[in-house]
Length: 170
Image 1 (cartoon, rainbow, N blue to C red):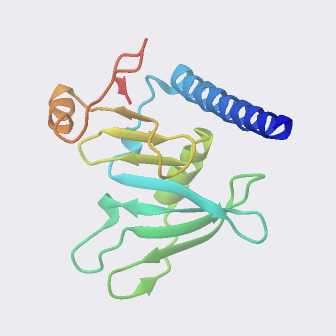
Image 2 (image 1 turned 180 degrees about the vertical axis):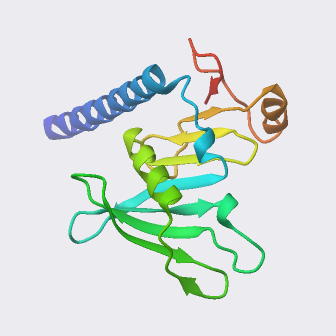
């Protein structure tokens, strides 16, 4: 019985510590980037997929402004060195074939994305910002481009304004 109580206590303490760490990371992000201009990421989805065998970060996503009707560019995978943020590999995927492109814009976006120390960033074409701190599946915050976007998105979900911020919601 004592072992079970100890196990329950350890599990509870672990959950509590994890929750506190998540809250701390969210607060640090908002303190630093509450008024950040994310317009360079408009139409971009960028997230950390994991690491390759050599320890390089694998970043994947899509970029709307690079898609076109003939080749449908936009989906990409890149690998970035964790020491100097140097991009060692970049691969573009089209709807009907795969291509290799060296895009300075994507390199710039990836390096800027890494400074936020988050797992995922989505900025839609309207300018709404979706931030994922912990992992690329669990959204932490949303900053809406304007009041109309907030009202439109209220049909999808109920949003709670983050305390002491101008325009961030959970």
